[in-house]
Image (cartoon, rainbow, N blue to C red):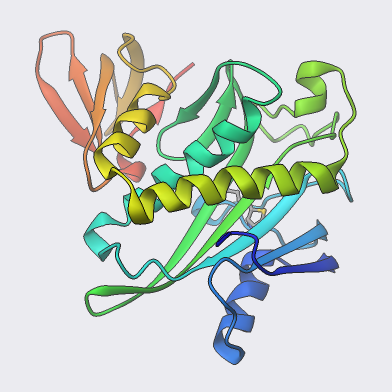
Amino acid sequence: MIIGSNLFYYKSVLSTNSLASGLLRKNELPEGSVIYTDFQSAGKGQQGNKWESEVGKNLLLSIILFPSSVSPEQQFLLTITLSLGICDFLERYLCGSKIKWPNDIYVKSDKIAGILIENSILEDTIENSIAGIGLNINQEKFPADIPNPVSLKMLTGTEYNTGSCIKELLTSLDERYKQLLYGDRNKLHGEYINRLYRFNEFQIYRSDNREFEGKIIDVSSSGLLVIQGKNGETRKFSFREIDFLL
Ligand code: BTN
């Protein structure tokens, strides 16, 4: 086992990603170390957002990786690996989890998990990667400003043991990480595409303040979203360049 080889539990922290970054600077944490907690007072989401979670209800963790065989140009493979690992875990309990590009995990049209990967890149290598995951397990009420949250309990009606869930999640993530290190990376990319939310469906998107109809047909190796418009023309977008509407 790589992911989950060393577990560090804290009752409460500011953010597991920030803590992991501090520990990395001071210590020699082995690859696959996992920092997890019951509560974050300053949990970080993507694009400078907060990540809020009720005490003890959900999974809040950061994984330390040294993916030396993944070049900085290929860093999107880490997003693919973690997203698929979370979906594999969810598929133990429900069917049809999806990845909303680039790395939100959805069930139907609601978000059940988010990923925040912070890579430290030195010249042409990824020195280390801190992969933070927030996965909603038992929480049933969320702040009104969170657009479309959902948890495993809300979807299945069952209360879960978070201790068992984290072990299962780490097993799923470890399998996917080994696929990244030793397996077929094209297959990993193909599986990611197969799990994409709204893949190959005409939907409304917004870019540059303009709305347009198009369908997702691919994600490039660098992680750009490839959308084909109604006129057949394809365009590539980075994360900040496009919004999903509806
Ligand atoms: C997102 O905005 O979707 C990403 C959310 C990532 C949240 C997790 S919770 C554990 C880890 N520590 C943090 O501060 N953030 C990540």
